[in-house]
Amino acid sequence: MSAQAADLIETNFVEFLLSMGRAGGAVERLDDEIAWTLGGSPIGYHNAVVRCTASEGRSGFLVEEWRDALRQRSLPGSWHWIPGMHPHDLPRLLLDAGFEDGGDEPAMAAQLAALADVPMATELQVTPVEDASALDEYRQVLAAGFGEGPKEADWVASVFAIIGLEPHSRWRHFVGTVADDPVATASTLLTDSTAGIYFVCTRPDARRRGFGAAITYEAMRHAARTGATFAVLGSSPMGQRVYERLGFRTIFSTRLFELDG
View (cartoon, rainbow, N blue to C red):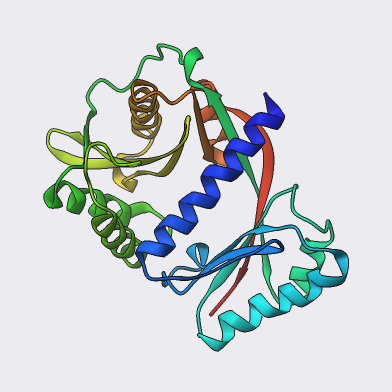
């Protein structure tokens, strides 16, 4: 499964960043050496290099070009490094250029045909986001407990509103509520038979009650019903064991190199 799963993870993740960047008005560079999305977001994670297959003679130049493009626009940005990128000394070149190493994070995959019937938090009600009111509930949860807080949540919600909330979209979003109070989120992106799971978040005051696992499980079940055969995601090291209980296995580790704008 590992070689196939690695390709599925990379393909879905690249489309995740590019599609959100396009909706935000980003400028793209897509050629045989490198792929990036720039300017569609105020969040460094989403102004990103997502692919690089350069020669050793070109790699240092491309790192400097990416750094200069960010500085010229006064934007924060990132380079999402995976083991398949070329050349293999990219981490050193990025550090030399002033990028900060955010450490390793597991990239994981699960076969949906083997989706186990895992007991979940029964009090959590998970519903799809299909209108502006539900999207605002999704935004509220992200603002309380995800990434850069309200700044990131507002941008994410605005991008998803542009992409659209149609039931048959490649993007689907979910809100988990307890007694009508929104406490958890998750999103899926379909690329062929793969469902990427993103923006899994539990509001801080509702954590340690199994809601993150429960909404991820419901997102997996929805993906399986739409014909997906694999689910993929990026985990924090702390969340790795939670996802393993849902059937995910670590395929490789990614590293996020960030430059402050």
